[in-house]
Image (cartoon, rainbow, N blue to C red; front, side, top):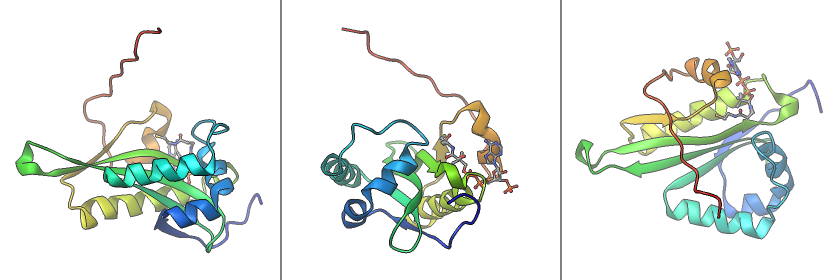
Length: 155
Ligand SMILES: CC(C)(COP(=O)(O)OP(=O)(O)OC[C@H]1O[C@@H](n2cnc3c(N)ncnc32)[C@H](O)[C@@H]1OP(=O)(O)O)[C@@H](O)C(=O)NCCC(=O)NCCS
């Protein structure tokens, strides 16, 4: 599969599509983190819960088959900014064998279009590793503040 990149579309992931293409969805997600423990039923439950919380999963897909890119857009309502909406980008991945072939750029361009055009977000933000800042810079993102994290104490 290395080398040639077939034609593909970017679309929002539906429950039916997830069920039909679960193996290639997982194969793409694996570029981010192991998903060995995830089964198709659980994934369907998570997708439904995400959608009910205004989180949308997008995929890059060859026809109606192989999923080769993935990204999530979470829409957050603010109390401030006149109840404005913020887009949070999460879990962006292109399939390993197609890395550097424009999938990440195309799926991100679609997410930005959705955040700004469909949802009317006044800003779109994300956390990323230092290594990936160049990728996001090319899409118009710039460094602003920083991400902090706290983990629960081990029980
Ligand atoms: C990061 C990732 C999504 C990029 O997707 P991709 O399809 O490989 O990247 P693209 O081919 O669309 O690259 C678009 C542009 O960004 C550049 N680019 C890609 N990765 C880059 C990086 N890490 N640093 C700097 N530039 C980068 C490309 O050279 C290309 O430049 P060009 O438009 O001038 O030709 C992909 O490599 C990936 O899945 N990585 C593993 C998971 C991950 O780290 N996800 C991000 C979580 S924050």
